[in-house]
Amino acid sequence: MTELDYFADVAHFDRPRSIAERAARAEELGYRTITVGETTGWNVVTPLSLIAERTDEIALGTAVLSPYGRSPALLAQTALTLADASDGRFRLGLGPSSPAITERWHGRSFDRPLRRLRETVEAVRTVTTEGTSKYHGDVIDADGLGYERERPATPPPIDLATLGPTATELAGRFGDGWIPQLFTRDGLESRLGDLRRGAELGGRTVDDIRVSPMVRCVVDEDRDRARSLARSAVAFMLGAYGPFYGDSVAKQGYPDVVADIRDAWAERDADAMTAALPDVLLDELAATGSADEVREWVADYAAIDGVDAVAVTFVRGMDDEDRDRTMTALAELMD
Image (cartoon, rainbow, N blue to C red; front, side, top):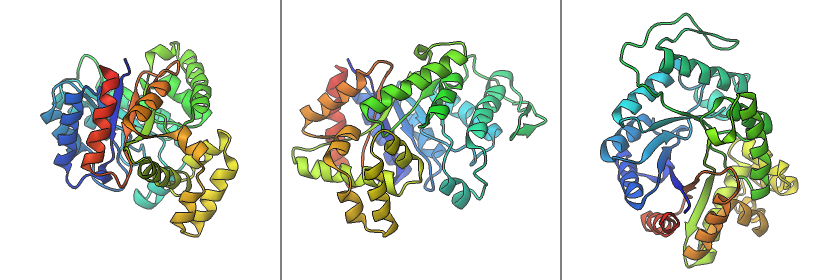
C-alpha cells in the first residue's frame, strides 16, 4: 500500500475556503497529509485554519514557509496555534527560500540561507519545547520572552524542503521530515544518501525522518493533453522559478536541457521553453497519462528505499474535474 500526501497550490483556487473543501475531499479519499505553499499570494494561515476546522484526521502543514518572511517567534506561534486548532495534526514546513522571494517580495537580503534555516529551526524549537524565544546565533539573536500559553506535550514536527547535498544533510540532521521535489529516481536515491549522513550526524537514522517527495500528476485519457500540461509546468519550474530547481536538475544529468530552457525564458519565449523539455526528462519528473500509467509511476517512485509517502500535486491548466479525477485514481494505491 502506498501512502499519499496532497500539496495544494493556492494559485489553483479562487478562495481560501475552496482549499478547505479540497482538503476534506483528500481526507475522504484517504490522503495522509495536506500541505499548502506560500510565495506572493495568500497568507496560508487562513486556509490552514479552515482546513483544521473542516477535517478530523488528515495532517496539515506548510510546504513551505520562508525563514525570511516571519521571525522564528512568529513561526513558532503559528505552528503552536495551528497545532491547537487541529488537535495536534499540524506540521511546520520550512525551506531556505530563494533570492527573488526574499529580496523582491520580503525586502530582505538573501544572506547565508542554510545558516538561517538551521538557526530558525533551532529557535522555533526553543519556543515550542522550552517556551522562550531566547536564542543567540550567528544570524538570529533574541534575548527572549516567554510563550504565554500552554505548550503541547509533543511539539509540532518541522519538515524541511531542500535540494542540494549540504542542505539535505542539514534536513537529515535537524528536520523531522524532508520534502524534496523535481528529482529523478536516480537523483532522489543519491540525495537520500545525504539525508542519511545528516541523520547520522544528528545521532539518529533516516527512519526518524518522514520523506515525502512532491510529484506533479495529471490523469487524463488524452495523454497528449496530460503531457502538455505537465511539460509546461515543469519547464517553468526549471527555467523561470528561481535558480535552484534548474541547478538541481542540471546536476542530475541534464545541464544542456536546463541551459536551453533558461535561454528560452531569457527571451520570454514560453513555447520554446516548453519545447526544450524532452520526453525523457518529463517522464522522469512527472506522472502523466491514463489512471493506470500514473498509478504505476507513483507506486514505483514510492517504492524507493527511504520514501514514506508521495506528495501528489497538480499543474496549472487543470480544472476541478482534472484534479478530482487524478486524486481519485491515485487513491486506489492506498486501498
